[in-house]
Image (cartoon, rainbow, N blue to C red; front, side, top):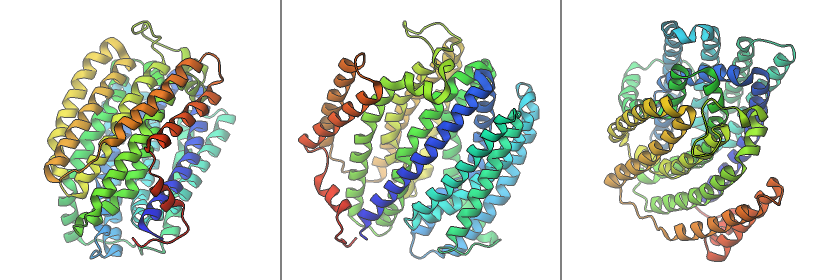
Amino acid sequence: MSLTRKIAYNTVIQIVGKTITTVLSLFLVAALTRYLGVSGYGEYTTIFAYLAFFGVLADFGFFWILVREISNPKTDIDHATSNILTLRTVLGIVVYGAAYIISYLIPQYSALRAGIGIAAFSTLFLALNSTYVAVFQNKLRMDKAALTDVIGRAIILSLTLYLIHISSSLSLILWAYAVGNIVNLSASGWLGREYVKIRPAFDFGYWKEIFIQTLPMAVVLVLGLVYFRVDTFMLSLMRSSTDVGIYGPPYKVLEMILLLPAMFMGNVFPVVTRYIYTADERVHAALQKSFEFLLLLAVPVALIIIYDASPIIKIVAGYAFVVAHTIPPVFGVPATSVLALQILIVAACFSFISIIFGNLVMALGKQAKLIWPNVIFVFFNIGSNLIAIKYYSYIGAAATTVLTEFLVLVFTWWVASRYFTLKLNLKIVWKVVLAGLVMGLAYHFGYNYINWILLTVIASTLYLIVLWLTGGIDVGMVKIIISKTEVES
């Protein structure tokens, strides 16, 4: 199978797998929001937002370093994977243990400590599972990662629904995550034995080498998570759990949407890294196709979310979140979860493109050059949120996220262009803008007369037709992907 078709196959498989897990997650969110209510769901959101900071420390950038390590043909995959998994286990136990202890220093979290402890335990297994995901990604067998993810998520949903049925507490419901994540890790280990033999390994010299390599990445990831997640954390300290609850569903939708570029670039990253290692000129074509695909995807996703935000929130969280608010209307628009989602999707559009440059910098091994830009993002985000949350609560937090992600796009492009000659052809931009304009007009004139689902199908179809007519869709690439003829990579 050609490299192009392998990447396409893995991307499609991941999309299918993530579509299934997203549907399961939406059912899970729908069940939890309706069972816990706005305030209770705010507590649930606070627990996982708090642990997310420690999750980055537990990951420490090992995932991307492992992907880059095993993309090098000279690397002993068994040695590298075994040592990194052992190191991650030790570090994870220390970090998540510290997360639970530190929660005692935050008075606002006194009622959440049991939930934090349980969620920390379950999240450890999810972090360890990403080691196997790196192996599957390198082997372009993300179908196996998708399968284990679906199994784990299905177990979590099933147990949660049962626990809700018997009127369990939030703390007890969180145990469902522990069971699901343990099964996920076990299934990954079983399916991954074909590619790697993992055993406890304590090559401390290698640990030191990897730690030194990953330290800049860890700093970048920590800073990145701070500016991406700190708004929820600040909301929990500056506002009520109701504010956090209102912000929770739109942010959950944002996270699900951002899985799309992450999945695609996850498949492209090993290829780009390999091309860079071997000084292969095809790296430029890989980056160009990545830019075109993600831009083509970002525009319709943004338009769908902007116009369909209200029914999406109603489906995901329930009608209470469509109308719930703690602040007055903003510029005449009700300050609900709907408005927060419409604002956040703009941030997602910037992320669709910035992820290309961020991954390129990592593939070049220049992740240390992203530290200072990320420091700027953190200070800007925290400073802006201190003002925005004070006056506009979750709406202010959403707006700050948009501004921050714009800065991320500008700075990641700047860093990438300093160490790599970018040869992006921007002809696709006007074609996407034209197609997006037609799609937007279809929404605008049909919104009050056509069912929103049917209108979404019509508008999306018009988008594709315009792209096809203007040559925005690469017919040759489509033929390569769907062709049965094997093409040499």
